[in-house]
Image (cartoon, rainbow, N blue to C red; front, side, top):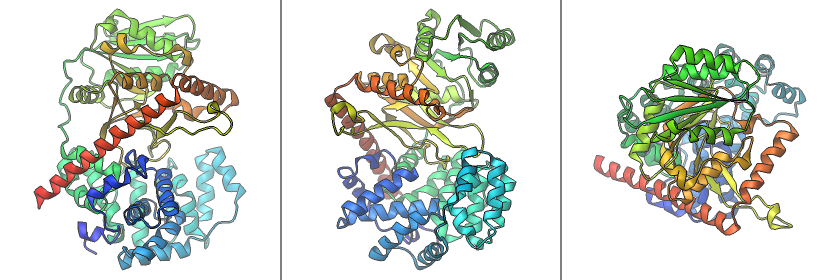
Length: 553
């Protein structure tokens, strides 16, 4: 197999770019994302179950599953659904089919293993490593790698993970493919050539991703364009490639837009000190910084005083409250300061982030290129390798009706397209959306009078960001997600930290408050307009890529 766009059709069934629009009616969430494992499986299963006679949909399902296998070659679940589709359509090249069939035969179901479940529950990487080192030495080594691949890659000790992989006795091309993924997840340069042509699509995507990460979008386009021609149904790749095709140069300096940088903290002295250090190490120009101490009883006051002495009171202002007023009120307090209201923009940061040097320039650059949008957010991921995504762009899903009463259904559902999955590099696009993460986002201060601040009914936190983003959407100014910027979040998102019944109940209570602000008709209209915009952007990106291909031809 030589690796051209024609050869990639030995991995995917034929699918014309113009057919992408045909997925919109039966599969409205296809336009939101095709990248997370749960979304890929859900879309493919829905097609196979309900539309077996629709050739366009079946080709899309087969292609999506084939890409899922490129990403997760040891997934017995993916192979079990993919191979029958190939049996019906006959689209796989012989060597690809043979590789899949051989893997399916060896990926035997594992018996229930309570010990492994207990090990995972401890979240102890040393215990996981010890368990897996023993598990991969038996006849079920491949099955255990498939079962525990994510946990293996997540081991903080890359060398330990590589040693376990080496013990499994895999064929050279499969070992090379998995080793390359392991290295890339740990921030090392992956040796992708050894994976061979069977994994050509994955190799070509990674080659383009490495080019993009090294500041060469032109090389990324050259790698991704033939791949996209073979899988034009892929929503994330379509948007990311279109963005790379028209990518503006990374800003060399800060735009002159006056921006207030805002943060608030409660009893996280070490983390807020680290965040402030990261902030002042980045390029923020002479933009003012305001930090609110939300009634802390630990060493936060001392940490903030030391930071103010270090960086100067003219650069860092500290607001001290005697009690914790919660996140919405803390944000409103900062936004009410006259010095903040005098600025064109306000950038909110969580108190536990690590910032790249050009974070503010990237946010402002995106905002200035998209004046039709208001709040600008970015990709949020776990701080440590291998990075797991916490959030990208948020969209709404159709409400679920309750069985007994309207209020018993889930009326306002948020589509989180990446939470908890490893950052594989396909959320680097830029598009308007319903909401973005509050961990790092940029607001227009001119909209504060029209839209308002953050609703204190969501105290102490949860859904106050989404609530305000919905209000800006209704005011005709959607959010903008820019995946060009990735922020490392030291702690998990507060949603993922919720573990006690009281914390879960609080989140559910705030969700009810949010849902109660809108009628069913209003929610339906929000979902409809959200999906309309998402599909319009996706199809526009597809047309741009088709034009680029015709130009090359």
